[in-house]
Length: 70
Image (tube, rainbow, N blue to C red):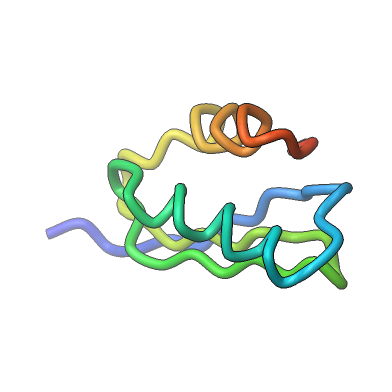
């Protein structure tokens, strides 16, 4: 059984709770994601997922939403 691991992606241009909600909604449905929490004040998205989590793909998803993930 795979264990969940926590990862963090920096997102420089989240401005409000709506931005957080948009990112969380999209990432919550991505393969391997168990939990996601965006924080516009800190500029971070914390993602907890299994061993097969594709962080590059998740960052691309954030970028496709119009944000800047690094």
